Image (cartoon, rainbow, N blue to C red; front, side, top):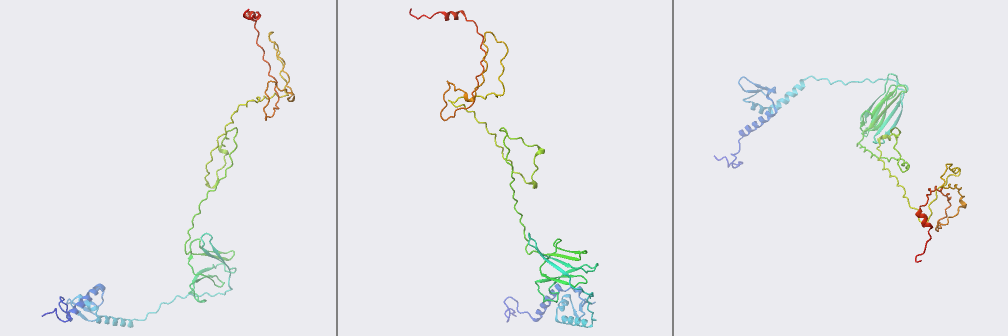
Length: 377
């Protein structure tokens, strides 16, 4: 019989499967699926009898192997019986009471009114972070009562229609009414120094301050360090062409504050060279020496005896006045353009003692005494 050329068959496929073959293939696929999703050992309706076969206690069916039972659990009959059993158990189970809600007793007291308050808006000048400072006055509060606070969202209150852009800060203290402040619904910075409260028992004032978190953190760039120029005093003048000695360690000035490094000292200038000595110009008389002071008298003549051959030195004459000084005959006239010298003419230097005279020699005396005769006579 040709199974390949029957209607609906493909060449080489072996023909169309029968209904029994299709059922067998379907049960195998369901068994593989059940093995992956169901654990037989935990199934309450699975039972193995004394004959070695398997039974379903829910549907009262008999199966030869585990694969047949797993395929049964995925079938319509078993699923229908499971739904019926669950409905029956739910109907027979007693109704359990709902859990009781925790009731909070509202404390009733006589309210005397709203407290006074003061709100201050602040902004950090360096970072730009915004904050709010609240000051509430409770002058008639009880000694044992401490004010309390909390944040409330816009959906918890029933006074105004909810708006997600705002939130409420509540302050409560007996016997005053509870007051609320409407603040922007932004995240609160609850760092140690950004959120704090303080209750002053002496003045009966309650303080609360909080900061809003920054959307974008601001990075503070360090300022560039500027080195200020240090003004130094001018160098001291030179003394006799030499620089002054450095000060001692105990006399030095203290270092500048702040650890500012001093710039290096400028090099000391070299001492100026002495001016060259120029020769006196030709044609001008040398400058006369200074006269001795007029108050001193001239030295007295020496009383020691001089030799007989030497004449005594002439006494020193007093210097003439400057106006009566005669012009020497042998001195050249002053050049044109040069003012005449008005300096005082010094007295002549004292004449040294002449040397001792010796007697003339005979040759010298005859030569000097002989007359000179002209040649040729």
